[in-house]
View 1 (cartoon, helix red, strand yellow):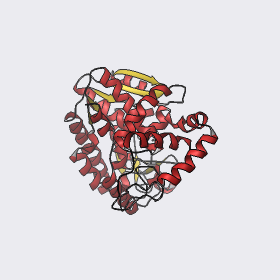
View 2: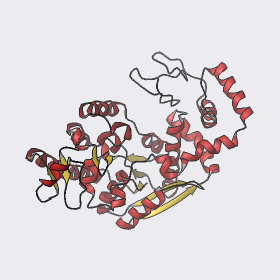
View 3: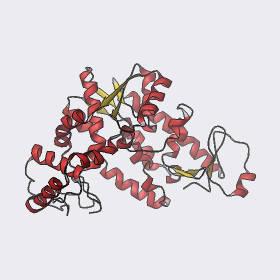
Length: 356
């Protein structure tokens, strides 16, 4: 969005500018702009973002952090460890590609975190799925793939006698971290973000509560949210070196503090980072085709629920067992599962159907 306005200087990557502008740029400083007014604004934003997040973390100190090695959790960890010892929990599925392991290890080493890596297997996952489904009241595969790993990490912290956990939630929603936002014009980007802000919720909060713990989310502190809401969207998505980056201003604000591999790590969902993205293939092998088709048909006839694949079936069976029959609905319902959905929703939180 800023590809014709902003460039970055020493130790900062250049935004994509028309070639003639490069020849006329003055010597680099921290953050420069073709417009003096934009220069002041970008410098102020970086300063305010650092101050607001430092204050937010200070007010949300905890005993541990769920550390993926992504940009968001790494920033929180780097700020929190300044205030005292911090234990970091990193989670991965046994036998699956899990890039979080190496990124989290890099962050733990850089900031002297007491890191615990927990590799869980399918038996442990299946044992914990009923509580995850019961707490979140969903059988959306994507939500469960992401949340089950978080829940297992929380349980590890709870076993160690800890009761408070930091997370990096809300940074993607506030500062445009999702790739589906990258090609929007500034006004459309701002409108889409405002819709996200109204609908955003984070599974870490109820899952922690179910374990008698507290999940703390510094990015949700009022001054951070206010800064994001008032920010020119041109500072959120920027093209540099031929690639578009979300959360651009966040990356710039903390790039001197973090390893470059973390600052410029591409956003990946939890399921990719910890390996649970392989679960569709796992369930596909575990459930015979004949059993799947029989149950898929019966569930559609009896419950009016469309089961999309074998993983979906596994989660729905748990969902139906722990939550019972569908309650009466009074508003809009999802056409694929018949559970209630918000009037303005484009996807179903319960079953994951999109679009609805």
